[in-house]
Amino acid sequence: MNGTLAASGALAPTLTTKASFKLTDSIYDNLPLTGKGTVQVVGTRLLPSKASLSVAGNGIDLNGSFGAPGDRLRFKVDAPALERLGFSIAGTVKAGGDLSGSIAHPNIAANYQADGVVFGAHRLGRGKAAPISATARAARSSSR
Image 1 (spheres, one colour):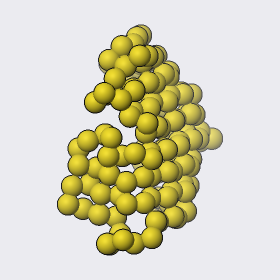
Image 2 (cartoon, rainbow, N blue to C red):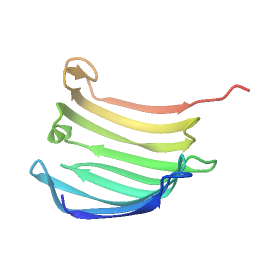
Image 3 (tube, rainbow, N blue to C red):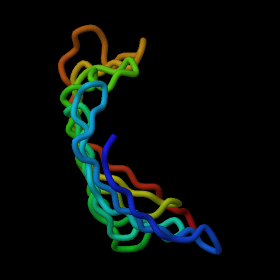
Image 4 (cartoon, rainbow, N blue to C red):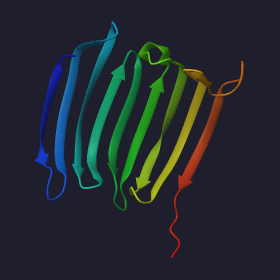
C-alpha cells in the first residue's frame, strides 16, 4: 500500500478526530487499490465527510454527515467483481442511498441490486435465481 494519512484529534473528554487519506499506486492481490477522503468525527456524530475507495475494481463512496437533525450521509456501492476480494465472496452488488437520523434512531433509504452473491457456503437466493433488485426504507421510531 502506498499513500498518505494525516490525522488529528483527541480521545477524551469526547472523541474528536479529523483524518485525511490518499492511496495511490497501491496493489491488493495484484489488482489496483485506490482511495481518498476526509473523515471528521465528534462523539457519535460524523461531521461533513467525503471518502471513496476502490479495491480490485469494487468501489464505495461516502459523502455527507450523520448523527444530528438535518444530517444526511449518501453512500454508493458498485461492486461488479466481489470474487476479486477473496474471503470466499462472489457475485455483484450495486447499492446506493441515504442514511439520516442518529445512532440511536437511524433512518435509511436505499436501492440495491445483487446477482449471484455468495459468501462461503451461503447464497443470496437459491440456485440460478434471477438477480435481486429492491428498494428499502427503514426507520426506528421512538414511542413516547
